[in-house]
Figure 1 (cartoon, rainbow, N blue to C red):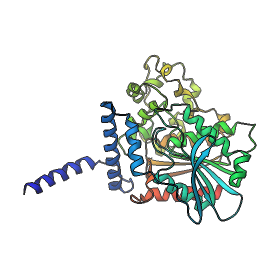
Figure 2 (cartoon, rainbow, N blue to C red):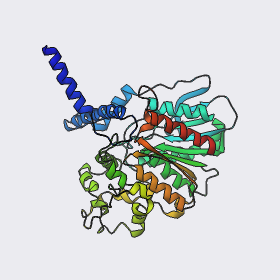
Figure 3 (cartoon, rainbow, N blue to C red):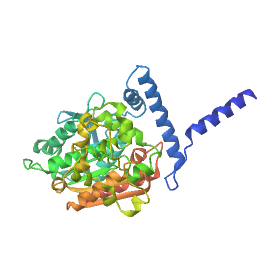
Length: 406
């Protein structure tokens, strides 16, 4: 009897921890709750480890990722898979062995807040393997350096170095790539790197080849407004919470983590911050850039007086290499055709939607692929054991777009 009672108590506690009220319409809510409970548990364990001085939070999380998700390079009859180096950056190469030559190429940057994850994770191995097989392509997944050991612009420089190598004649010859059919892509923070690289290289007249397309999956593109409609609507929706995004921005930019509350209050983008020009503010003015169905009844948070000197402590908040949404129109106009995937239940939804609109206004051909039942990170759960239905749809549509446009 006592054992049953104790079991019932433990079950009740577990259910209380797992259960989270979710908005109606989100895909497979119980799967999302279970995933979120697992991730929250590991993040809290990381916080404890850091507070005790055992290790940095992200080091513990990456050890867990290595234990659970790391997978060896596995070739098949249709696909040669190996780990190598491109442009001085470790990468995993997926090369379709049959079909036609030369082949299309995709350069992929994984997500994880510029601090977590690896190209060798099961989820990214699955995605890139599927891309290479279905597109009859060469896909290179990049293991750029991670925070806290590497901070901006280290990750950006890695992304740029590997991109220049990918576009080179030497690499094209080595992998039998068609230099007119190359794509740069990534999800979340990887989408940030892909967008930044597309901006930099689109304006580089010294290159003899350019990316044909850019494919951005729920990219994180700005850090000046943590009160866009999607940040307001989804601040408590898993798996990416508003405070977590602010934390990883500060980690990426090498800033004091105690500034998190100031960022969340938009003190860094207050009207008394002279470093933010009216033009820069217009680049992320969601009252103009978002359609009415996304703005809903939300109102902007306009702060008159912010934290003195805050932008001086984190100057990269105004650097378009870190914050691609701040790029000028003439820079955007030189970037390739774009695919931008967004999810309704994602704090980053409006980053992607605003960027898509700014690209359109700059004359870039854009395909917006929005998932009304989607959540941040869904493509990482498109395979077993989770098998998210919206993640699977998103992966299939993403690859279909690449097939038709690359």
